[in-house]
Amino acid sequence: MKKTSLETLYREHQPDAIEKRLDSKHKPQIISDAVLGGIDGCVTTFAIVAGAVGAGFSAPVALIMGFANLFADGFSMAVSNYEAIKAQREFREKVRRMEEEHIDRVPDGELEEIRQVFYRKGFSGEILEAIVRTISQDRQLWVETMLIEEHGLQPINLDPIRSASATFTAFLLAGAIPLLPLFFSTLGLARQFLFSTILAATVFFSIGMLKSLVFAQPLLRSGLSTLLTGGTAATLAYLTGYVLRHIFAIG
Image 1 (tube, rainbow, N blue to C red):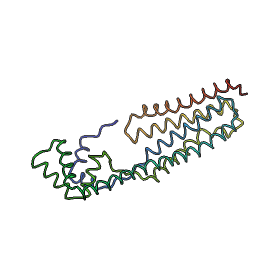
Image 2 (tube, rainbow, N blue to C red):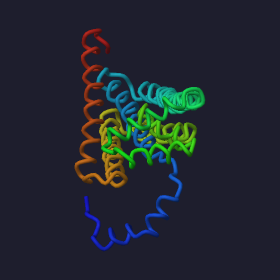
Image 3 (cartoon, one colour):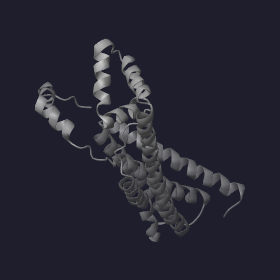
Image 4 (spheres, rainbow, N blue to C red):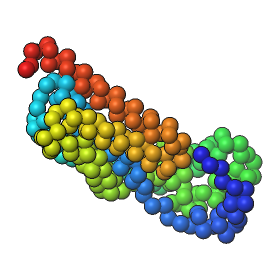
């Protein structure tokens, strides 16, 4: 990871730059949803190809199974992501309503909670009381403080629809790539599987590199790590198909 120059750091920490940064609204980031969908999509379809080849199935069978799982699993993953984010937001809203009710019904108790929260952070005396007064004068700030400090619930900036769409789109795009060689029947199954393996490895490594650029991780290490994850899953699928093929004497 390249270090930021001292000059840039000074410039970014000038009062006007800090004010501008804090005033800007945080846009929901969907890169993690896309990365997760892309990896899972490629793993899903390439594992099916590897398992089918290991079991001795034909390319058309692998192609049908691959596309069936591509759409079904992609939709299932997108819906699961949507429901998970939606549930987080609903739970936070439920706790918010509870805290607002507590402030209305037992304000002294809620003030004491604020006092103890910041006492544990090292504040005491008049400074502590000033913090309590300042926070309790702004109802929204009071509630948000309790959500974060008492319940550990950070603000959720994710949009469930955007996240689900990013997951589904990345799943379909990345998952379709290992299936492409299966359309070319003239290649023969062995070469179809070889090209599928090369394409899948390229997808895994590319996703890993994309992840490294976004999250400032070492480029090569991130690419190889993602490649290893996908390769391990595909190897397990191939071995499972190969072993079961011999157990049940398929072909």
